[in-house]
Image 1 (cartoon, rainbow, N blue to C red):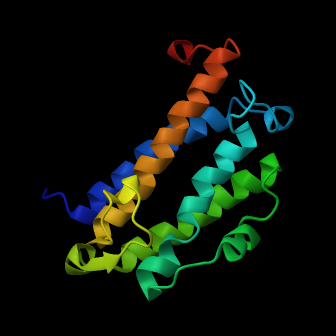
Image 2 (tube, rainbow, N blue to C red; image 1 turned 60 degrees about the vertical axis):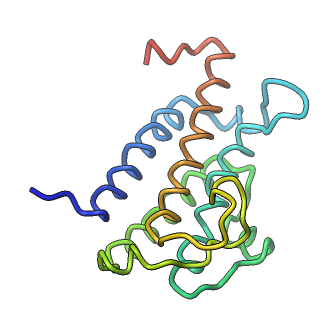
Length: 161
């Protein structure tokens, strides 16, 4: 069976989310405001960061619309609530998958504006639509690694999971 670009992107989203789900199963509401050291993001801050990059994805790729920070904040809801953050992560992923499923292979190759250039966009202003999806998975994976380290710091060794 030939693997399509869509299938590869969905596989990357799935594998990355499996890692996050493993973390979420080990977290509690009491840990949301904890960070390993002063100046580091809290656990809730890490989860909110993951979601806040995916929230504007569909409006950007579908309509070329850049959400304002206040629009992202409104879509996110309470960034300190564990239950809210879990719900947002699930809901936004459904929206991402629904949009991804609506695209043809040609549409995945089409160059689109990726918003502001940053290291996640390889400092480019436009990328193939598929790459913008992949940037979201890379971003999530980066923060999954941080959260894994947070738990390890607290004595929850990921090699025992």
